[in-house]
Image 1 (cartoon, helix red, strand yellow):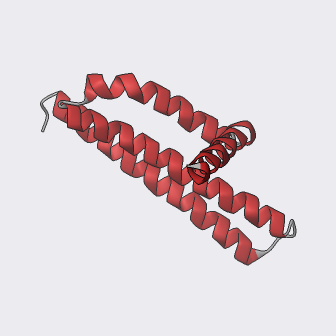
Image 2 (cartoon, one colour):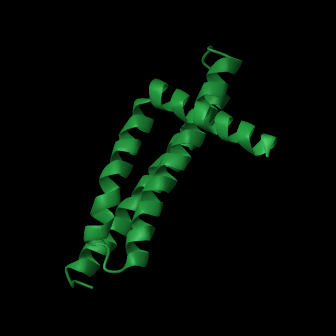
Length: 117
């Protein structure tokens, strides 16, 4: 139980640090807050609403991982290193792909709600 408690504290501390240090994390948390009620309006079913919220949570998760990669890379060296740039770019691409996926899920759900599909 102590291990679980410590892991929870570490996770909370990581989230707070990310919120304080990264604008993208703050924006995605705001999107999540907006998505919670919007998903219930847009989702044609309870499961669809849950899926819509889950896609926004997934974007936040990938952003947190990308932020961790960037912070670690910056800690290794502040010099311009093309290999580190590629790593950071891949993390950014992961966020971009996840955003596109979430956007498509939301568009699909809106079309479904409007009876277009």
